[in-house]
Length: 282
Image: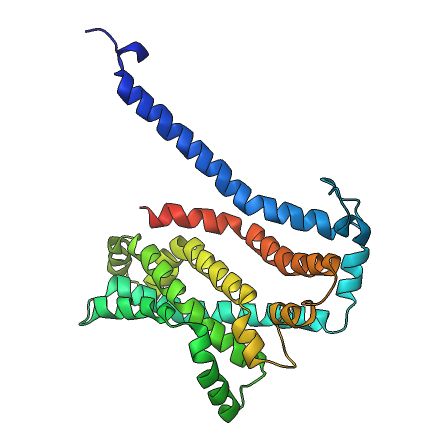
């Protein structure tokens, strides 16, 4: 029997494979450009002088003029708003994981009436637009004393992040065979010990990835932060309020101050994010 060669492959099949490969490469390049080009332009204009930002033609290489960034960071209220963003994002991350991870574990391990309905309701919480809930939330927070507080805003952001935390952790826990826990039970572990010693090390990348999503959701959210806070604004709400009539070079500096911390955080925990996909696809 002769070995098949490239010439033996039917021409229509080869053309389809070549077209599919071309579309895959083109789509990947466009997706990378869609993400990286705005970041590149943001960095170039942030590190350029005000004259270069407003002048023409534009330069592709920044002059590394830090004047705009220094002026922005020295602007009154920026450091406090940046600190509020960090605190709110961290609280949102802790609360969403503390609530979402147990819910995801329960959905993956236990059978109970209305389980499918509960999963659907968790997902449908994202169907309600935040502007529709802003006024009732503001009134309720004023009554309970949570208006214009970091904790109150973190609770709102947690509500936005919990559906993602529940669904992500549910898929991660579902990828871990229950037989591993049962084996730990037969060796003398109770359910909590089996979870801590067997399941938790395996799902830690997925939980970390869920925490990343919660962090970025809170970090980028602007509507609730603008409506529910006045003195304790986050950086996004502060930028929306203060930079709407600012010069272009200060807007770029503000955008860089908003984007770079989130990129640094994601880059620092990227290995857990990449490891999540391997667990979820088991």
